[in-house]
Image (cartoon, rainbow, N blue to C red; front, side, top):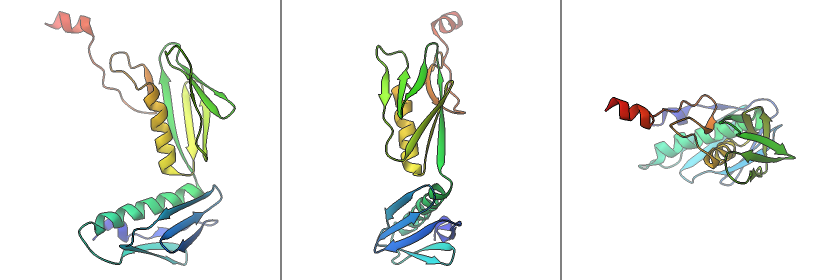
Length: 181
């Protein structure tokens, strides 16, 4: 039995949930999301809560049950509140700026790197902090990871693009290694 899957998902005001066959559609003030539900699971909308339960119990059903509940809860939260992630840029001469909706990064390459936001994602830049926001949790996370992959933080000086609050484990340089030996 899945402990996570058993928990009901509360539907906030302004959010509608519709099931059409194996597709679950969630619509709210921020946008609309849909997801295919596996045939092993059934989704029931009762009043202001969503309950997910297994139809068939096989080896993988408990893990699918918990996963599906977490994904649907993320959809409900996304269309009602939205999600946002922050990235920090560290390094001399490293900066980010917006050209309309397009994010332009200057991070030590011979050319600026331009990243166009997917549909439903918005960028905001304040000093050395990039804020990625949207209503699809998966898309926000993937876009954030794509931007970070342009120049991940390096372990010697810590320069690069990192998640807000991420701690980079620093390594000793050549001088510290030579004097210790």
